Length: 166
Image (cartoon, rainbow, N blue to C red):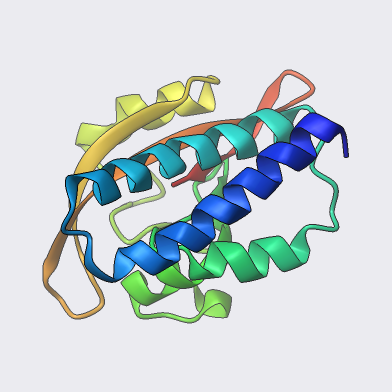
């Protein structure tokens, strides 16, 4: 792992720790800004360094530990929109275990396709463009939750093989 990547990873880990402390009550505008900034930086970090092959397979502890504790939903989906990785917050949002979510599509997808209003966005992501959108979805308790979703394509050898959802 190169020095720049190591520094960025350390910064993301420190930011994650800070966000865990402040996320107990996102009441301050600065807290929300820090959360959004971290969300964008994490998506950029994962997309850029995964595409370049810089992320080794060894940060499993980071993925399982730090990403599970973050107060945001993180997942990786393949080209067929099936979950290949989900963090603990994503599991909680669906009310399902990681094992039950992996290999499945998000609940809003019907017949293997994203909802009609989002099909253009997902098509862009599968063509290599990062996109974001806001959506209201039901949570595990049945109430509606509004959140911003950022999709970052995973490009390997010039081909999109999946995407990160943060």
